[in-house]
Every structure is written in structure tokens, then in C-alpha cells.
Amino acid sequence: MNAPISDQYRIETEPLDMPPRLLLGPGPSNVHPRALQAMSTAPVGHLDPSFVAVMDEVQDLLRYLWQTENELTLPISGTGSAGMEAALANVVEPGDVVLVGIAGYFGQRLVEMARRYGADVRCVEKAWGEVFSLDELRQALEEQRPAVLALVQGETSSGACQPLEGVGDLCHEHDCLLLVDAVASLGGAPFFADEWGVDVAYSGSQKCLSCPPGLAPLSLSPRAVAKVEGRDTPVANWYLDLTLLAQYWGEQPDGGRKYHHTAPINMNYALRECLRLIAAEGLEAAWKRHRESAELLWDGLGELGLECHVPREHRLPSLTTVRVPQGVNPQEVTTTLLQDHNIEIANGLGQLAGKVWRVGLMGYNSRPDNVLRLLDALGRVLDR
Image 1 (cartoon, rainbow, N blue to C red):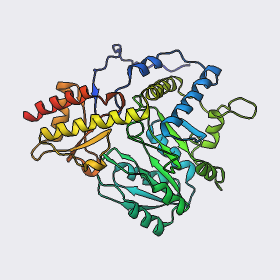
Image 2 (tube, helix red, strand yellow):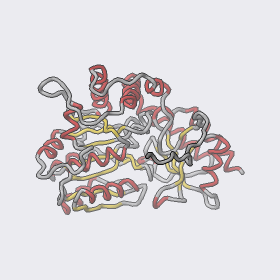
Image 3 (tube, rainbow, N blue to C red):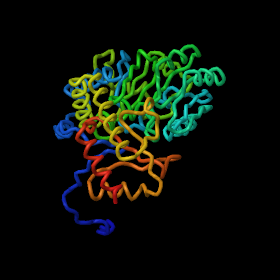
Image 4 (cartoon, rainbow, N blue to C red):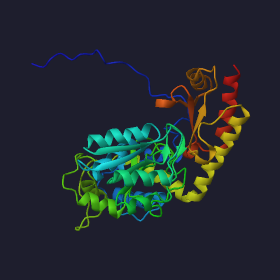
């Protein structure tokens, strides 16, 4: 006999109706209207020839975005943190020395993930908001002799942008892979995977790409692919095993694709549309737009008497950390902006909690009208 049905959680709700927020925090950013439209397109099967064609277009557009010829370039089905996990799970074997540059919260997350895959993690650290010089990285590489050097290009917690020119050459000299977190920077700041010698790079769809959270662009160089294919142990994470994913995202000898998982069809529609829009604008123009919006914000903050946490030469164009003035409650400001002005910015994270606000100008949101709207609202709130 069947048990009686419980109606305890059979609640009556209204159709979904969310407030029209302007998302100027560290992500997600507002989704481009064309991406939302693309998501409403009827799904097809994950091995349908028409979807396979979309997959091919997404991969080519990601190669343009990363500025790479890497064959193994694809979007991981998961958020940016899944991209981080996929990167580490595939190129790290138990006992590998992994050197992590920590200058913020997401450097610390790299440490935590690498340890879970059995890495012998070594760290080189800077204050949150600072960046590593080539001399500092060279010294650390000579001392630690790692298999992988992991750096965060755009540190979302500090607002700093780590220079990468020359780092790949250092890694090649010391026979290690360069792994880069570009979650907050890809599409908003220059990135040249091949020219800079980046071996493993990952990002997220929800920031400068103007797409909803749920996909993580990833690209591996031939050196990194050789490391994956030459492993002595299987990749510990089945879902993120690139030797399996490559059989789904790449054409097989028989001309087909091998089933791995049911890809998020409509999310890939949205990503394709966002990447198409970036390609139409052009990377140089997109980077310039992000920089000009950031400059407008920085100048406007100065007129309000506010200071940025990171020196101008190392600021991330897509994410600015603003020092909270003495005597001001940061949570009251962010709450008032949200409730009275429908604008979201974020408070500080980790070591910078209570000390800064984090303001994102990412992708579709990186426009002068949004900057001016925020500056006006922030001025009004602070005047109170």
C-alpha cells in the first residue's frame, strides 16, 4: 500500500517576477538581451548535428577570445569554479609540486583545490591588491621547481590585474606549466594565450562575456595536453576528465561524437550569441570599452572623495575595489543602493571585508551610462 502523500511543501506561488537590478558587483553581470533571446530558442538533442555545429562555432569563437590555436578549447558545463577544478584535476597528479601565487581570495581557492588532488602545494604571497613581478616569480620558480605555476590574472577580491607577459617564458625555462585564472578578466582585459605561453586557462560565462553563470571556457596548450595524456594516474574527477570531454567536443575517427554528458543546450546557445557579439565588436574594441568605462569610474570616484585600493597601473578594468571611508558602514551603503536604486555592488571579501566595496563593469554593463548612474546614486547615499 502506498504511503499517504504529504502536502507540507505543496505551496502556492505566483509566476516568477524578479526585480530589474543593475548588477555592478563582481558577478554575475547583467545578461545581454540577445543572449536571453537565444536561451529561449527550442533545444535540440546534445548530439543533434545542428547542435554539433553550434559546438564547433563556440570552440572557434573561444579560440578567438583566448587568442589561441589550441585544439583543446571548450566550455566546461559548470560555473567558473568548475573551470578551476577542471584545470587542476587534469594537469595535477598526486605528488606534483604546484606553486600558487596568492594575492587574494581566489589564489587561496586554487591552493585548496590543488591540495584535494594530492598536490604538494607551495605558495608565494603578496598583499591583496598587489601583483607579482617577474623577478619574484623567477626566484620562486628557482626555489620550488614546480610542475605547475598557478596565477590569477583578474583577482576578483582585490581588483588587481596580474601582468602575464614574460611569465610563460619563465615557466618554459623551468619546465613547468603556466595555469591562469581569467574568470574576471577574459573579454574585459587583454589575453594572449599563445603569445604569452599560457598552458592552461579558464574563465566563467557570467562576467565579461555577458552570459548567465553556468559555463566555464577552458583552453589547454599542446604542452598541457601532453601532461594530461601522459598521466600515471587517472583524472580523479570523472565529470571534468578532459580525455573524455575531448571525445564529445572533438570529432572522432568515425566522424561522430562520443556521448559524455548532456550538455546544457540553451546555455551554449547563449554563450554562442555572446561570443558572436564580442567577435562582431572586436577584441581590441571590447578591451578599450572596458578600460574607458573604468577610467570614467575611477575619475568619478575621485570627485566623490573616494580612493581606489589598487594603484592605477595594476587595476583590473572590469572590477574596481573602492576603499570605504572612515566612519561609513559599508553594508548600509550596499543595502541602500540595492533597495533604493536597484543597483548591486558588493562588499569586500576575505582580508578586505569591511574595508572596500567591489564594483564590476563587466561585458554588457561596461558602458558610460551605467557608470554615471552608479556615481550619482553612490553620491546620494553617501551624502546621507
